[in-house]
Image (cartoon, rainbow, N blue to C red):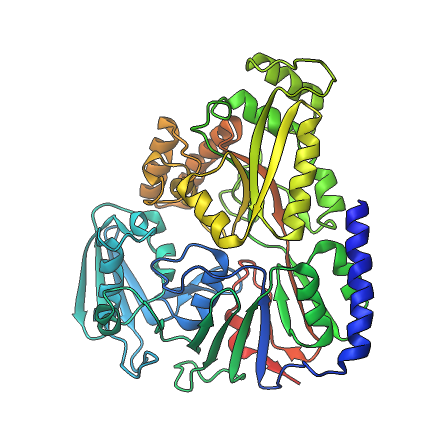
Length: 513
């Protein structure tokens, strides 16, 4: 806790110095919004991106056939309406006159091309598996596109939230955006300085009306203190889900800053490499689960802005199952399980370890502190932890390529239980999907496949109830917490709506007084 108090002390001391010395020299312009990210997006092509910050910016550059509203209902975006005449057929009627940022009108051919490119084996899209049930895509006419499925597929409409790319521009660049991503969204890509900033300008021809701000600037600031100081001095206008929890109380006292909090649909977890000779034993994973004092972490490090998680699906999800195996903090249970797994403590309560693991995380201050608490928790049961911290790009690449033993991450914006197919089906190991832990379970494979074919919520809920119970018992992930969404902004920023999935779509309505 001393480190935490020191963090607060340095923040307040430096804030006082800067507020006295800066005199508003860095205050952002009235017709621009400067937002801060803690890590850099990795890709601004919607067909290739998988990280949260890429998704946030993609949502401002691109539109999709369907989108989520504020209550997470699917509503038309580029489409005017859609029909589902039978379980195999979906027909979308596109809005007329929608233009890409290069001035070319969007048509059914662009929609057809977007999904066919994802399905092209040479394109290597991480989203390919989500669309493999599509049998044919037909541009019926300029503004009508028809999808025929090979079999009923419940997540199909959810997957129509993919950003649509312009066929001609993508083909010119070898099917991938090597430079400037072009969409139909409210903002136009202008510049990307690697690991420093991304700049977007207002799309004057946006089909839903021009944005109120002329420019958005996303600064990449990995250091918590510098990011928060920028907000206090006016150099930064907006931060979402990148506010150190221990500094929230200080920000709340600042009359120039507005804080918004709300329930989210995100999930934080501890992941394992299940190919590892130690971690492939479920008893070891359960022992680690019993060793983690989640309540203490939520109270002391997260300032209470999270709830203990029981599984991947948030409690608000229609398919959530709460009657699953729980792993309350219990040191003695953890020790017994490690003994049973063949890892006895060599010297009782002495300094010798049962075994040692490497835990990878980012170099963000909060992530490092969480790692240190996990290290302390696991030491109590005789497990040694080496903490390795990296900048976001290196860390994320290691996770995707399986170069890890332990790590922690979050899934963002979980709206459908089909996420279990993506993260746990044995066919979904990278680069095909997001089964980064290399989890294999034939019953899970059968159930999540069955869940895609069942079309009613009632039938799907029964299936995913079983999936959640198996996952809680086998622990391919250790569920940590459901973090709440937190947005901090300057008082003069108006019009922002805090959405459950953390989407920034309301940026098109933001203005500054």
